[in-house]
Image 1: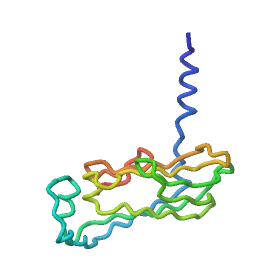
Image 2: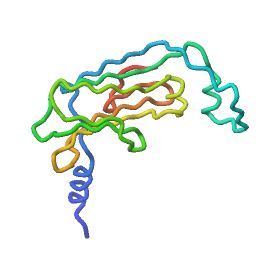
Image 3: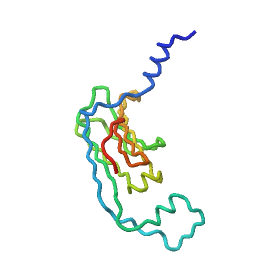
Image 4: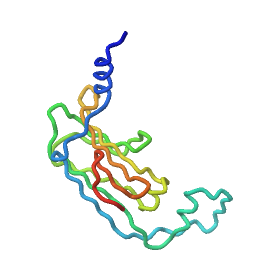
Amino acid sequence: MINPLFILFVVFQLHTPFKPADEFELKINFTIEDRPPAELYKKSYDVSAEDRSQSKTGSLPYLKVQLKILHVAEQEFRIRVEDRHGNLVSSKKAEPNVEIKIDWGFSEDIKEGIVTPEYTVLFISKDKKNISRIYMVIQEDGTFLVNDEKRGKF
């Protein structure tokens, strides 16, 4: 029989801990920008969420986030930013005061799930093990969470 404490230990080892909030600074840049008009000569018979969103034109709320890393642990070598699907958004050498810019997009697109509503910033060691992470997500109701802590609502 497997010891339950062993299972708990393995689960904690697989889960990357959150980076402490005092080791990074997050600036939210929420502006109003014009959405370009949809293509006039493109006809689609599939009325998906993306098509409905593209029909909304004019000035809409647009979100950009600037993340500044204040402290880097000794074993943190690289910073890797991934979207919900694990796609690489940015990769930088881990050093103090490095800035990472994330262009989220129009807030309506984020809420509707047309663009990714979540990003993970991973701090990786030289041997490519995850040391810590910053997890950012915007829920369907517009609640913005950073490391499971509410930071606002869009």
